[in-house]
Amino acid sequence: MRVFLVLILAAAALAADRKVYLETFDNGPGGWVANRYHPLPIWDGVAYCFGPWYLDSHHAPPGAGYLNMLMYLYTRGDRIRSEVARGNRFVEGGFSTNLTNATITVRMRGDIETHGAEVVLLVQAKTPKTTANFVLTGQPLRITRDWSDQTITLDPDPWQWTCLGARESRRDVYGCDDIATVLADVNIDIMLVLFPLKVVPVGDVREPHKLRAGQDYPEEPSYEVRQEFLPKGLLMVDSIRIAYP
Image 1 (cartoon, rainbow, N blue to C red):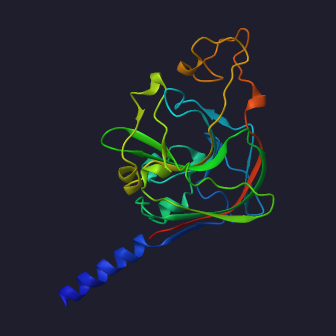
Image 2: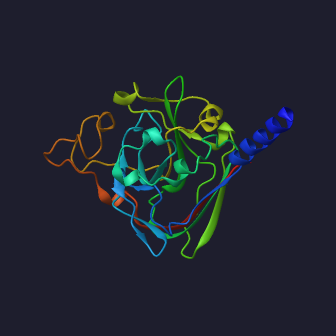
Image 3: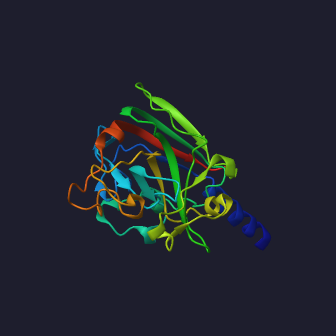
């Protein structure tokens, strides 16, 4: 009887790990956040991501580059400190942070002037070595005018991924690790981002990559970046599905 009970519990644990996470946005954002700390706009069960988007400069050269944060989801409850991130159905559902070989399907449509950037998935995790950020550049999501289901697989093949690293002043926080280690426990968040970006200061800024673009640049002649080089437009997301292998 005891062995039978152990087998039942083991099977139940395995089934829990194989649950499918599905967010349809029919009951709000479900913990997804827009830009950096903004509420994610939801209308008629559809999430709307429209620019101007937050310009993340943490990974500026010598890191892999700049990105726009479209929307993101914390994967652990202890990371949720902002009111707009509450009601997180991934955390509340007890879904596994082991996303190795998981498939993510995003039903989306949009109209974006990308200026060379692509919509890609970002995974972020704290590892024994560092805080690592990887983008799945080998499987970008296509932006289509009509609704389409875009499916990507979180394969630990390092050739599929780009480690973002960090600009010089953030090397104490961000770095690189093995993508297999990161996927085994994506313990911070997952994001949809636009990457890479071309960031050009409006004025003459000496060593711009050492600063936070658009924030630390001198106010004279301007602290802004040239918007004509950055993506603009709208991305609509109808659902996001994560299926475990």
